[in-house]
Length: 338
Image (cartoon, rainbow, N blue to C red; front, side, top):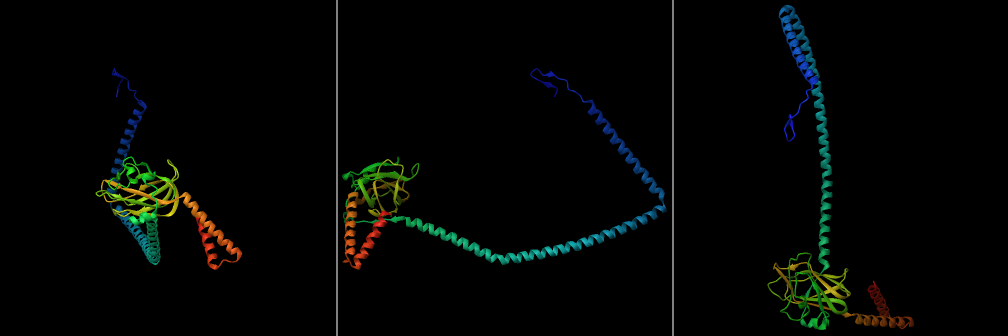
């Protein structure tokens, strides 16, 4: 204080004489008051010493008055204690009543909690069941069964193509060939999303079943996967063909679609895998179904059969079995339209 700037020049500090005067006067007044109080105390002590017997009488009166005051205070304190005791007893009774009411309501509350817990557990179990029902489990398929399925529309020899896969994977075209020593391979943990592969079929078909195989040992195999379909690629919208669950078997597994759908391009998304190996592999993917022309021919045959049955019914020559067949065919047609 007193210096400012780079040159450290001395600056004058203004002095407030009014405040200084007030401070001095205040200290003097306090000293005067303390002196007067001391003189008054000394004078009072002298008067008490000169009082004598009169002082004793006054002291007796004063003691009596103090005794009466103490008795009055005791009475007041006694009444206060009684009131406090009554209020304490009343509060204890209220607490007892509240505890009894709480015990009376406790079974109902516990029952409600048990019901809510049971309902939550039931909802959880139903959700798990729905999730499990959503996935169609694969069935091991033999060579004879493959021959009965018909044409593999994803076969490389018939014009099937592997269009794309996740950036960490390679050899996706091996899925369309019959060589078991070649396979699609990808790290099981990818940088973003899940493992996937896009395959183009040789033509638009009504997809009914998919067969996959994983023959490579010392690698993880698909467990749960999703199959999407579309008529053209690339696309921003995919139709869900189904959710499937594969076993850890090293044989071919067949997965039947719950709701067959028309598709030219399919996308397989691997949601989980068996094993804890670094790489996941898949050896083959086969897609079976009927072409759009075969579907049109089947629909025409069904319609012709239905027309014949309706004509017989109108002529009166149809029996009850044919009438039932008409109703069943109409129901199938309505369901297909839906």
